[in-house]
Image (cartoon, rainbow, N blue to C red):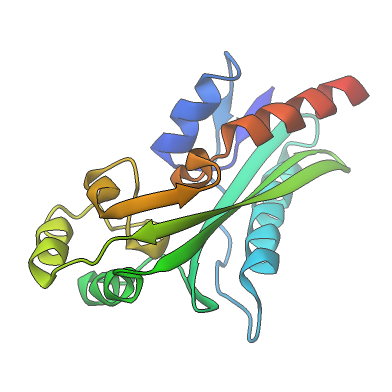
Length: 186
């Protein structure tokens, strides 16, 4: 059996396009950033810890775990703690370039495959009114960088350089390739 170690409806929807059957068992781990931890090692660690947590109790199953973070000026913008935090994040990205990094880990027992996909995103300049209107929708909750590109925040984006699905939080082509590699080994 395949297990998706995430409660994200977007990841569930995208995985369903790749495999017909899977279970969803969200991993409950501490997602704190360690002192001086850079973004890519952070998302790699988060995805690996999520996969390991679920694989430990399901060693015969293939676990797919993913983690996404947003980075501006080397600062990791995780999930906002409240609306004020979300507003601060959106202001930091307004009229600027930021990076979205998504790590994916596939694990079955001790076998593991992993990848990190990074995408450059440019936001157009945002007005306070636009930010407030967006925040009133509550879409920012539980999203790295306080936005989901597939929702109302899509109007903030002036350009993307890389994989769109990395920004959504599940780089589909990379997951597909990792699945192929994993099944070839079995």
